Image (cartoon, rainbow, N blue to C red; front, top):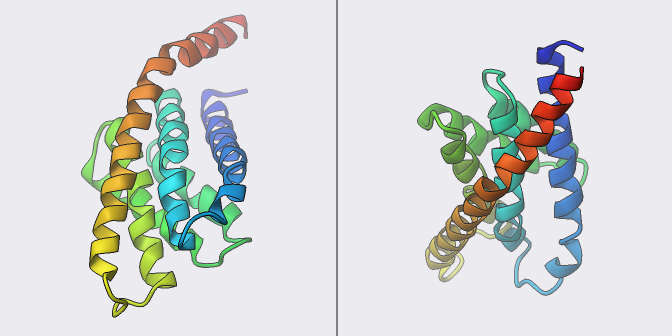
Length: 166
């Protein structure tokens, strides 16, 4: 299999892992005051999956492909989620060269993009809630990035060993 095909397969696997791990958090959504807070809960998972995927592929625009594929899969459950995942992916790609910045922007912006869809802008304390959500998801994304950087050598070591066998 060519290296480009392997990279596409790695992106698909990263998205599938993000969906599976994110799906495991669904029982906790019932405890949250709004469904938009699911974006906060998903931030660490999306950061880890996006970062490790981006570190293992060499395709240009990989974060946009990752976000688009994730959005397509999740749009089955919520039609607006495609745009909520593609917009941060595009912004991460435009403003950051390193995969760490792309992954953090991708994961931390989703709460703020989901919030106006679910909650009207004229809701009392909307902007305070939005600011709190952004700070919480950004903090969780950065903590997840630290964790992802710790496990990256193990994952890439296994990847290199598999490539040498082939």
